[in-house]
Image (cartoon, rainbow over the protein chains, first blue to last red):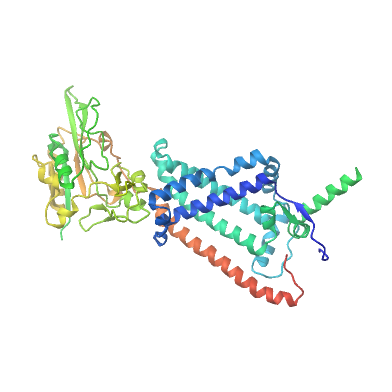
Length: 223
Length: 272
């Protein structure tokens, strides 16, 4: 615990990672809003906001291009962070599986004893995978719908339901992700905005990562 | 009201194109001159402003003679219409006449119907509004629904001088079609009545002189699995899921708030 002193912070994300995250978030939100009036008639009033259906389509396409960028931003500007992310989401150990029952208790405000987690906890790993899958679904089907002339008609027909299912899943994932960052794990916001988190947060939420950092520190001291 | 259909007996067509002119005339559609491409066929295919076209397929007969296969190409008005299923704005619907029509007020010009029509019929027309801004609307043959409402036959049918186009009682027309089919079988062994059951029949039924594929028509069109998955499952499920996630989050927020109150007495367990 912090003992009243100004909390020490630890570097969590580099600029590249942060920018990639927010480009992704901004593009996703814009895509979502510009497609809503077409998804359900309940939101038809959004058409005039975009200057009519044609305006909504244009904005949707501009945002679509932005939506394809984050992967490249990450690889170019923060390859180390990207590698760490990839390494993390492919690693599934006992402490990852043990996370879920405890997380459910915590999610609904009950007492929980969550096992020590990696740089990305098991929930974030699941979030990452769902996000990757839905993003691939949305981008690939979206490109087919944008340029139908280049694809056989069967592919074009399937693009529509895939885009639709991808949207449903992606929104569910995004709602969960946003809720948790705002409510259950508020200090993590600092990590994806300023790039660092309090030592206390790291210890509490990402124990295994914190231990690794401490170990590295020890080794550096000894060397 | 007895069911009425439009019937096209292509073996009676002489390619005069009166139906094309009548359609343009009645529906007030602009002429669309096209480059000569080596065929006597006037237009390559249907467009948003050309709702019917007579296609001229050139064929060599069994005894080495040359022959044209004419077909009055237009919307089939499918019993189960791909365009109607594809439309996210429910702008496309069936009338009591069995015709499939586009509600221009609801249409936003997204083109989902264009990419889902298996016959390549429905297309987007571009218009310019008073402010000079372009907008698009889906357009196609509406079987002259406005005329049907007044007790008139479709414009193309009234113009046909060979009785290739007929608009009449469904049972009567189909019975006559069978008789006609038996009669022409000798000359056209592959002749068939094109009224695909996979899409619950059509309101424009054809008597074709050759296999559907010869005319570029799908042999046995069916409502695509992709559309069933999309409209009957994905869309309602997706809307449900949006609701479910929202409810889960609200539920979590409420129960967290309640439990937090209790937790403070026990010494605090929050992660902040």
